[in-house]
View 1 (cartoon, rainbow, N blue to C red):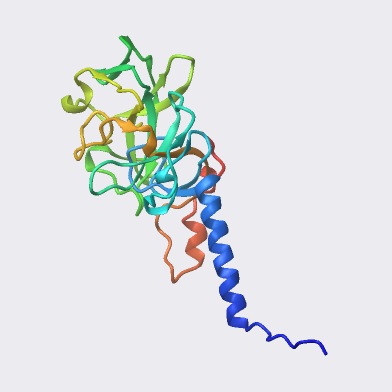
View 2: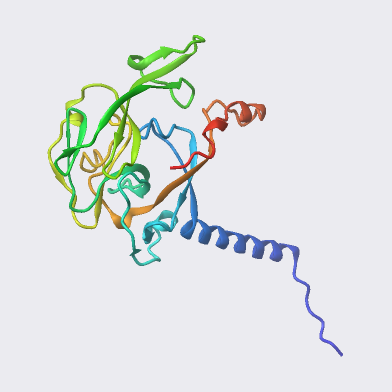
Length: 263
């Protein structure tokens, strides 16, 4: 006579499914892709507040900060140094640590200095060419200081900044913003990047707490074991005008032209 088996309850099946799903998500975001949202304007013009992007986790290796909340479960397994110009997500130093996104400018052994707003890398100024102004609509996600306010052809309020194109050795280029003359940011001492570290800067050069400033004012040099991954592609963007209780605003607030933009 066959033994009867006790049927599993619907609740236990649901719990098992949720545990498997949580494990899958943990493995996926630890080793493959993780989402990241832009909370500040430090990476303008490339990234706007309200942009959402995927970060690839395999480019440089893995470590403690590959896991959510920095669980110390993985040894340091970093096998590759970023390339100058890469946009990376990393864990900031200091007691108030959090995820930050900046651009790699200096590698171990490099010397870096900023003179009159121009970056000098290993004794040679990085070419900086003036291009058309960068403008961004004023929105709930971007209020804009009065100094930089303007209007577009239709009379809508926008923010306007002087824009430049920098070109790194090897030909990698990207746009940066310059808000004016700020001696503490535009004229710095000479930095020498220590072994195992990188020097990071925001593209919005006059509004970025980065490696030019020591922690907690800025970030200082960033150890490789704090880098979580490289920015890969944008998958959503919103201007912040959507209301949770008004579903039709979820569409009007979206910025579809920013979806799919790579790095």
